[in-house]
Length: 177
Picture (cartoon, rainbow, N blue to C red):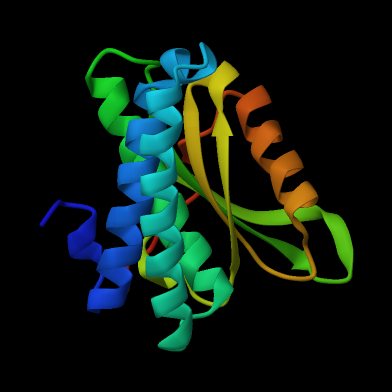
């Protein structure tokens, strides 16, 4: 069992993760050859996609939400990209950003935390999730934001942190026991 699979308790979650990871890793590793139109690669990619769709279908039948599956897919993609980075690909660093409005009815002032890695569970609770792959900044960002914010507003806050040189180095995180 890989390190990423260990995040997940149920067999369905691990199967979704493994299928998504395998597809992301293989696809990104073979991108240039794939773009050159080598037919054998299409067949292999179809196998990975089929395994992913089957795992997703079983997990959905077991009651997993679309949001939960999206989080598993994002974790698998980021793990694959970090592995490729270690193997000599684009150098990515994984970060998290958690953000919510100080006054929910008004944008512009936010409670923000951003550090390396993924956010502690207590900072993920009650928040929506979106992953950002920011190649120009060599950053993989796990972004957790609270409604009424949307993905676009969360991205603007993340880009603001980058512009200020504070992605991965902002805020205070208090761990719960």
